[in-house]
Amino acid sequence: MTSRTETNDPPCTAPRLLWCIDDDRELPTFDGVGRRVTRHDASVLYDVVWDSPDKVLASAGIEFASSDDDGGVWTVDRGEGPERVGGDQDEPPRAAVEAVLCGRPIEPLWVRRVRTVLVTVYADDGDLGVEVGDVRMDVAGWTSAFGETGAEPPHGRWWTLADDHRDAVHRGDGLERRVEALLTDAAGAPPSSTPPSDASGAPQR
Image (cartoon, rainbow, N blue to C red):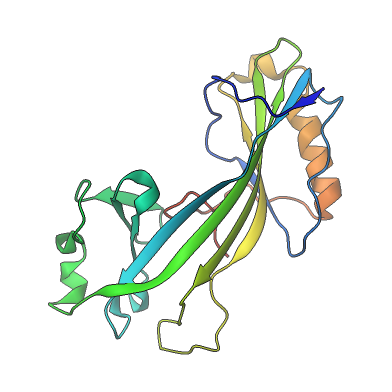
């Protein structure tokens, strides 16, 4: 049975697997895989990425971003995932990246839009079993680190799979494996086991 009813179940852990999707194909249906399937409405998050006019942070492999969706949260990502810095504030917490900026002014460079549709599949015991995400990322106002406006901006689409918090002993019903098989078949390619993420939680490529 498929529904769109919101629940109070705890969220799954971070995605364990992802599939890169390069077209507009639909997620497979999971009816009959678990006891119940819930399809949630889409959520959209916006992050603003900041840098100096000469893109010194990007050249150093650093992303400095703010997210209005989280009440003014600032993050720094040095290639190993975003770390929150500076607390909630309107002004950029420059101290976190000043060693690279060296006094340069900074400004908003582009806006990242991440649209996520979650599907939760419940196990036979009624507990939350897995979460499937359909994640799309695009940007506005982007130029590359060296000012090449014709270069391809960071964007993409992914399907993700996250397990619940149960240990392996309680995964004997094979729900995760069945959902994974459906996603692999629909994607036409095997998944990656180590999804990277940006400040919004969406993987990048």
